[in-house]
Image (cartoon, rainbow, N blue to C red; front, side):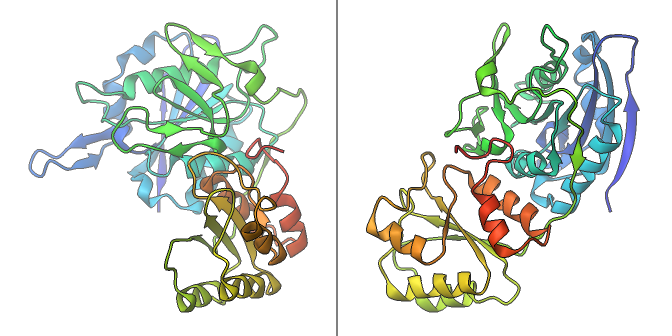
Length: 354
């Protein structure tokens, strides 16, 4: 069970930001004996970023106790983050979530659906090197994420009223991101949607790419999910028996089907029959390209048309992370199968181009 600890650095200033520290490399320290990175508490992190105190911003923090490795992230913890934001929504102008990089895009995508009608910034960030390392990217990421979460336009409205990821100078829509590099400081990419902002000597916001602020909207927090889903990737030589057993799993409710190119699959009768049988049983199959960028167009080739006829749904230009968490979210509502299928083709939070 993960508990929370509360920290405060409040001052009588302008914007108020709540930092939610879940864990990750940014707050780790190197074990002197093994050399391995281990989680440390939030006090350690704050001690290495005294510059935070220079910001003209009220800052409070809630820390997971103990902090978690992002490889251990689960939907239950997404719900915990949602609860923290929901309970503190009226008190703060924005939220910064410190998170490990491995599952950051999954969390950002999930939160974009679970925080319906969000009209405040929720900025996820982290680092590739611990905050205490000499060449850490953590300081810049954390300080800039706080500044972005606090930023307001001339009307006093938040500049970025949505869930986003800030990493290495780039602010990206959260449900459009994917971790693209395990070593570079530019760990995240958004191949199918332009950046929301660029941080250099100044922070340049690209307002045309940012979701519009709508006065009067009230946050609706959602906690239901169903994770009986599998990610299934095609490859040359894939075997019939394995596929049939996978798609025939009794508890399986949804499949993220990673296909070739623009949404194509081998012209094998047994594969189409297995997919048709699964959809006839009420399983939701979402077609997502294995390519780093681009969209699914099943109507373009005969190999894609067969998938359409088998009941497979186009995931359009969605990331795997967004498609997976959106399907979890919809299945958790116990909607009729046809309604889930319909809603998967609708953009809820800018996760697909329509």
